[in-house]
Length: 380
Ligand code: PEP
Ligand code: MN
Image (cartoon, rainbow, N blue to C red; front, side, top):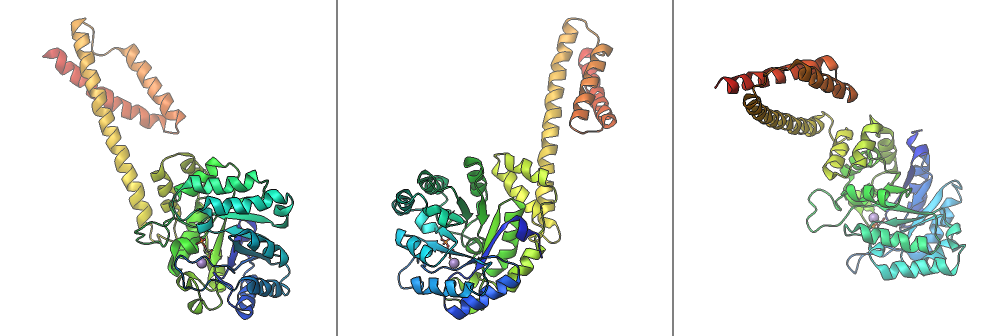
């Protein structure tokens, strides 16, 4: 079994609970893949009216009944109102999540939070209460929803990153904007954030690379929509995958090849640096390494430009020094100063892991050029 199942929180199951048979078939196939948390939506918030809105309490009963066969399977579902939470308790749901549309509504969030204020032991009935990010890329709204629960005394709050809705999402159904979940981790130290690649990607072939990216970035788990017959799903059919496919994806996930590098990149506040870490570490997305090479070569080009600008700047200063030397009849070459500067250059080089001999030859090349220029100025 893939050890990722031990290290990370892995949740899988259909977008919606559709029948007892669909739940049983999907749960059993996921159980076979080693998955121990089963998700299924029973109240489906639809952006437009008229769609399938979930089977509600009847579906909770299906979940309860299907779990009898797999007692080690935890059950997870979405809640949007206080009444939903009461029903989840009645049917032994272990984990609940607040959906993206609910997180975006402070009134709805406060109604839910008030329930936890009324009953201080209510949150203990659930292993985890997840808060998905709001549909819009507003970190304050996400933090606000989490805070409402925390202020109501809920300690087991975690977050789900499901991407953000923009008017024109070219590739993704909801753009990932990885900087936001990373910032959430910085703003609420210790909070766990799992990734929902299904609602980010919106299509099957994006699930594997998104799972890889989330793990490479150090997120704490995955929630992936799986269905025993994805094409026939009543909701989100295009993004649901077979339980066996998810097992395969979990087995193919590679760990970051250098975790210290990822940590350094993530510790910086530079969004391009985060994107760079993501692309470098995403070998699934980049089987022949072309993307990673381009990212790194662009970086090298920028560094080379800075070296050239730095050298030109240095030479300008040397020309001014030559003028001072002329005015005060000082020699161009002063060995004490030369030795001091060379020494400093080598020590600095050594302290950042550069070879000192290489540093010496670079310094000598630079110094030779400045002596040559100064001699020209003094002669003229
Ligand atoms: C879901 O998980 O099925 C769902 C509706 O997600 P979201 O709230 O992220 O749109
Ligand atoms: Mn869905």
